[in-house]
Image (cartoon, rainbow, N blue to C red; front, side, top):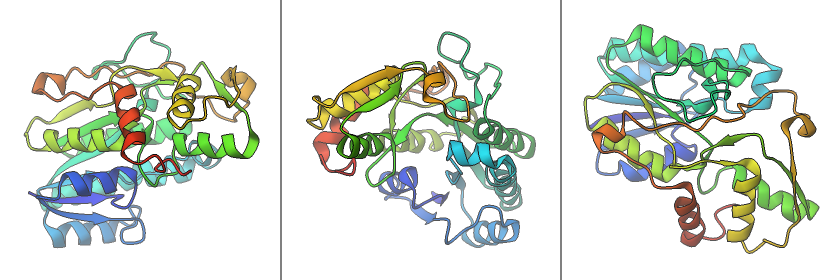
Length: 283
């Protein structure tokens, strides 16, 4: 297959390159392809002639999106529309990487692929706009919602936890934001299995199980040999961030599981992440 990857230098993009090494893949980072530049997107996709485009490029900075929602919509919404239009012109399928944050988090149980999105922050609204553009523009598409990605070299939650532990000596983490930590390597492998099949539609691909930010930090510290670092449970309200996060946004994998695509529990993946190279999280 010929596969073009936007966001090809990011956490997921780097893992996709490894997983898809036997295919003809073209990873393009932000410096090589600005997804808000429609002409550049059409040129890149038209020139390469991919069978499928994996659109992983996005602005995932929740604070930045909340401070500048127009920027968020420009990158995550309009940028995705431009990618979808270029795919239609080039007769390529599109896999759009979306997020658990398209849901409000008030269901009280894992969200199904068929559940109605209702984002509560600017980041979630911008990613949902991208989903809607994909669905309106293309017939051959995969929308893959995932959550809490981490990988080697990324400025992700495990890396931030360990930096903060070294800098401050203690941590305060919320207990009322629950989702599924997902190793980008596992997600990349699942995506590779998915695009090998012409089973288009909406998919939920995260590690199995869920935890709070507090519980995730607790496991990170233990695996890093830092279980002695004091960890205080707090609420989102006590944290005081200028945005809201879905309280409970675990995603149920029904559609991909029906194709035989499943991802292992988050605890197993996180342990392998540390065992593979204990310095991966930035210590």
